Amino acid sequence: ALGLYAQPAPTYTLKSCLEQGLLNNYSLRIVRNEEQVSKNNATLGNAGYLPTLGLSAGYKGTIDNTETKARATGETTKDNGVFDQTLDAGINLNWTIFDGFNITANYQRLKELERQGETNTRIAIEDLIANIAAEYYNYVQQKIRLKNFRYAVSLSKERLRIVEERYHIGNFSRLDYQQAKVDFNADSSQYMSQQEAVTASRIRLNELLANEELDRKLHVRDSLIAINADLEWERLMAQTRETNASLLLADRDNTISELELESIRSRNYPYLKLQAGYGYTHNRYGGGANRSNGTLGLNAGVQVGFTIFDGNRRREQRNARIGIENARLTRMQLEQSLMADLATFWQAYRNNLEVIRLEEENLTAARENYRIAMERYRQGELPGIEMREAQKSLLDAEERILTAQYNTKLCEISLQQISGNVMVYLE
Image 1 (tube, rainbow, N blue to C red):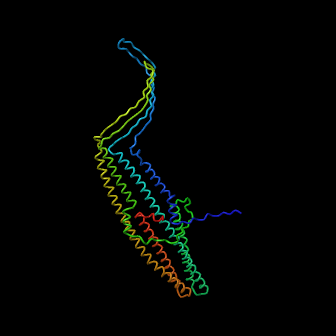
Image 2 (image 1 turned 180 degrees about the vertical axis):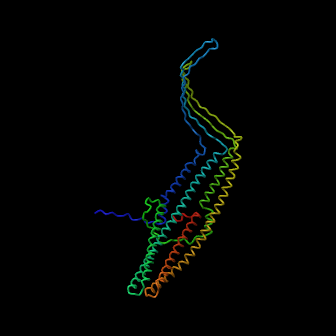
Image 3 (image 1 turned 30 degrees about the horizontal axis):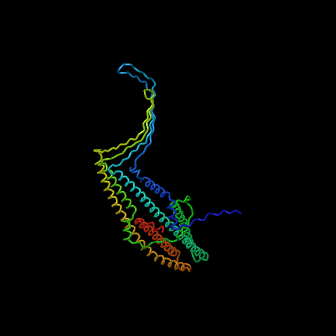
């Protein structure tokens, strides 16, 4: 007998998610292709260092009617339909030997653009790692919340069972029974709604991993949100200034602005160009004393020039200096903005760590309160409203600590990304 077996859902760790995302994510692949374009452009030929070599060939034919009158005798000679032909072929070389350091500046600019492409790829990689890590732990959070809601349903179901038994023997009123049923239905509805949140997070994670089936089932190995509580402010601040990719990109922009000014200044210098050629020309005459003529030879020349005035040079130099100043100011503004973000996330990170500590104590107390309340409820010593309140306090404590853990993790990821350390999640 033939059996059909469903393919088991893969189990992911954060590292395996990151590895797959870095390999397959479409946005990152586009950025990597753009980086390759910048690498391809950073060549000596594209900068103008190398000569241009061209091969040309041509053919020309003319049909003329000629009339010639001799000076000495006055005799007139007429030739009709004279067919002359010219065939030529040659190789031509053009080479700019010197143009006021413009070629050098252009090559340096292309190399900076190549490094800029590498930095853009690094930024895209770090953004993707941060997004995948955030969504991975969001999925863990939503799964934990689903588990908590499932637990809430089981608590409400047990309460409903107790009330139903006591109602039939007359210990509880119908109002108690109806209220327990309403609470059970409310918890069940909340559980079903949470399943939608789990599905939405799973779809987003599949999208980041570039899985073709976006609603593909997947399991994550982590059942808790692991938090790194050992980050240090001084180290984060120093690493941000030294290794933040956006700051490095701003430095590239500043260098490119300086090279643009250097390129404009190159027009203050003379230029030197070399032309050379080697070719063959064959003429075939339809009339006259000569039937044909062929020449084969080499020609070469040097051109020296200097642009005395072009009307734009001083204006372009002033604008280039403004561009350099703006690049410098943009870099300073970016650093200030990054340090502000770093300080904001650091404060939230420290506060959330303290919130987690407090909520862990609250959760322990809430569990004990619920245990005592349930025991009294079973014995008929506690009203249903107070029992529900004890249950709600337990669920609220679980929700608060889960939210604090996830918020702390998001702050941790942001701090690692700003300081250039987000690659740590690949280890």
